[in-house]
Length: 303
Image (cartoon, rainbow, N blue to C red; front, side, top):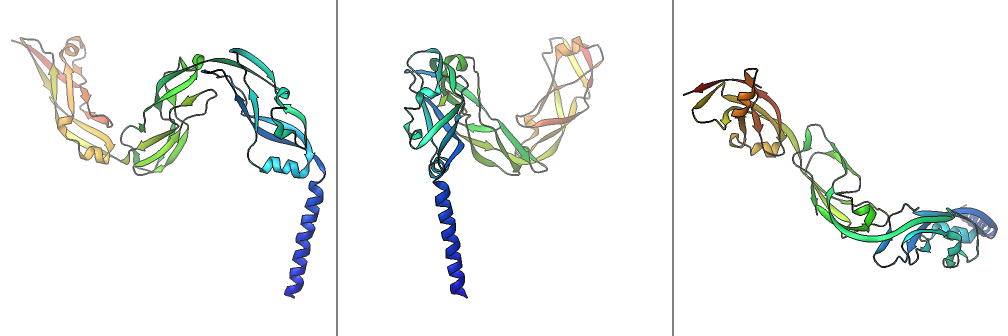
């Protein structure tokens, strides 16, 4: 029984191989997408024009050849930019001879697009600060305790002058993280922009994720600044309570000496309501949830 099964399986495999061999010997039409490479710019020149990443070729050839084009290493359709600056319009059919890998046992029926139009211009280099383009998702009760840290935080960019000169910053690639509940270190790349290059393409990312909690501070003294000679200000009351929110590790190290409440004497003089709101100064990376009382009454005395 086992011998018969082996003979049957061998027959099936042989039939499939024979059928495939015969089928791949026939001629077929198909579409293949190949990478478009625009090369040989003049020294220190490039293009920032929008050109396609790939071209679509309609080809005719034997099945085995078309199969090798689709499953083999990625092919390139190479086009020469030319030696002059300014606008260029070139026909892609003119570069079939310089892409001879296509002409071996394959007929080219059409190329889409069949032409390119692009502007060649001088390049410049410029250092730009990096802006993280990240989508962050946190587990309930967690969040960023401090600003996102990028290393490096800026990048040297080389690109076409008309595009790069007005740029003030460079975004990283978009990337999503989460759900997060702990400090996270990762990497993010820089966007591929036609004609642009960077001195580095990998940026380290540090996300200081902590449990977010509240902390109450009572009896914070409110100071009045810029009180002129001969004047005295009495606040009613002269202390406030603050509720602060932030990362658990940050709030654990925070004390009331880092919190300040202030009122400028000039604001009292301009006031017409009889009460003013103090300005609260708190450390970076924490937020004020509420203040009690929100406004303070006052008395100005002369002596």
